[in-house]
Amino acid sequence: MYIENINSPKDLKSLTIEQLGVVAEEVRQGVLNRVSHHGGHVGPNLGFTEATVALHYVFDAPEDKIVFDVSHQSYPHKMLTGRKDGFLNVDSMDGISGYSSPLESPVYDNFEIGHTSTSIALATGLQKGRDILGGKENVIAVIGDGSLSGGEAFEGLDTAAELGTNIIIVVNDNEMSIAENHGGLYRNLKRLRESGGLAECNYFRALGFDYLYVERGNDVGSLVEAFHKVKDIDHPVVVHIHTEKGHGYAPAVADKERWHWSMPFHLEDGSPLNPSHGGKSMDMLLGDWLFEEMKRDEKLVAITAAVPAALGFTKERREALGKQFVDVGIAEEEGVALASGMAKRGARPVFSTYATFLQRTYDQLAQDLAVNGNAAVINVLGASVYGMNDFTHICFFDIPMISHIPNLVYLAPTTWEELRAMENWAIRQDKHSVAIRVPAFGVAHATETPDSDYSDLNKAVVAHRGDRVAIIAVGDFFQKGEAVRQLLAEKGIDATLINPRYLSGLDEQLLDELKTDHTAVATIEDGSIDGGYGETVARFYGPSAMRVLNFGVRKMLYDRYDVDQLLTDNHLQDQQIADDIMQVVNSIK
Image (tube, rainbow, N blue to C red):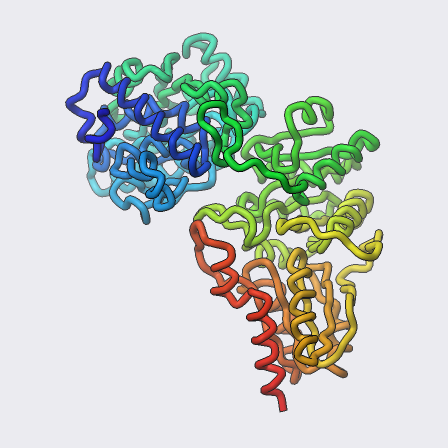
């Protein structure tokens, strides 16, 4: 094996083209070894293996700077830059992240990258910095065709072209985003592929780029030849390579959407290593319900931003919904603005995506939607410590971000029945812009029928009335609040338990009433404590004698955390919360 002797890109330089092809196949097997044991991005990495080998053979990293977009295709790069043990050795896999990370490799990874459409814009910074400081290195930005739909990708292209100096943009065109591509741009990419790059209408040339097309994007020799042509170029150039997503692994080629990312699987046939026997998540239940509602209501439209599977909208469902399903590509800003405009016109739009991706569209939530007060619905998915846990994909910073936007109602259901009721109300009403924090910690069911109308804003529900201590438990941590209440009952404390329902406002009348027979209030939320819901309660009680405890997750950047340890470190285990409350109760004279 060649890969055993490759510890840096320099070890590739003495190999022949034929030997580089062997290295590419060995790298592919290493990627498959990792994802089959550990899970991760499958198709994007397999399709970019030859291109990575060719890039590191032609260019001179780390002197030449390579910036990967979203990092879904960075595994081969990691194998060639001293991290192959994380792919070849099962015991070493936990030490390697799924994304580009200078914390992991400060020499070869230039940025922490886990969100998409960023590589070109980041590379323009390296480009301009080099030009100012008099450097001569090549700057290479790698971006997939799906990522080109993001607004930041266009902004980066626009800037790179005007700067006019060396920057090499490798467009990895595998004709896919996570699912299929959407948007007018892809008609031109198709025309370029079909014409061998010779079509007169050329998106990249129109922006001011030189342009080179490589049809055989999974052939090392063709890629080496192309990269040699552009190395040390003195102006911006796009190298457009046509690759196959999942190349070299039959299951991933046959079902490219399914194999964009995978949990661990049996390599021989692609079957799951640990089949799930549990029921559906809240996301999937919500998707099922919306799908049935859309069949009954032709004004109801589902919007996604390149993650249709988030609500179980399979290809078959998307086709069945026809014009009632819109995928805007990797363009959350467009998703929110589209929803606002549709609501203004009288349609009933529902835009669903993960909390970490909504960070990209704060301004549209505030300006395009909430300022206008249009009755669109935003489903915030994965917003929990139980959601994604990679460094760049933390989903529990949504409450500080969304709940403080004026004129936007942010709801936090506690059960499936309450989620369904809130969703139904949000869709049918026409007075408010509404966001709903879809629970991500299992599926809890209501013991009583929830309200059907949420127009009387900021009214909380008292699930159990006690005295001395009130527990206000938010969303899918309501069940944790109930567990804490029972622990306090064992200590002789009959605590009040409250479901606040609204994250964007306080039930001030209820909070005032608690002053009469309560001396302490504890808030529990499945999210960031800094700027979170609990702090608004603490601010309300600030001038009073009420003691307030806020339980949540401290503001930090967490990477691949263990949930149980995260809860323990932040005093969010049930017994820890109960003990902390008792300590305060016992201190009150």
